[in-house]
Length: 156
Image (cartoon, rainbow, N blue to C red; front, top):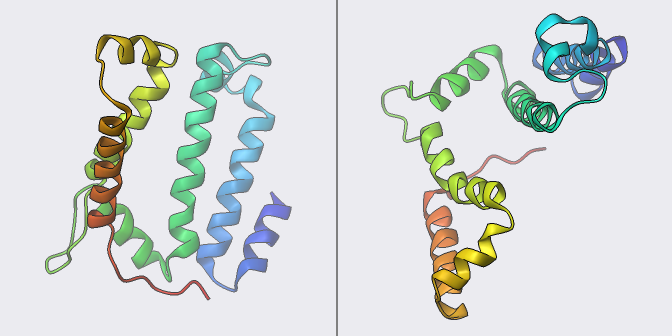
């Protein structure tokens, strides 16, 4: 925990970085003592099942992605505003995309990952030329480019 808190301070002299490091440290502690935490120990255990593995993977990704918000935000107020905007609470005058749009873009990727080997069977049932598949994928990428804002703030 101390290492992660110091890592947060190393990134910058802001409470957001301390929170970022502290929450990463908390995640490491939970992982280390996962077998002693009642619900977490049941799901993950020492040798996780397939469900435990995928649950752990999903929770870790969501945790890491969510912690990029305080890392990137300039203040706690900004962090709160970003989290609220992700769940549809957009301040008036703002032109932002709700989190359900991200889910809509990720849905085909998730579906493809879930069905796995069945993709080839589906391709044999729905016979389309490679050109058609390429056009569909290109259309999805074009849609993503249209939905992504054109302006961005520099990182440094």
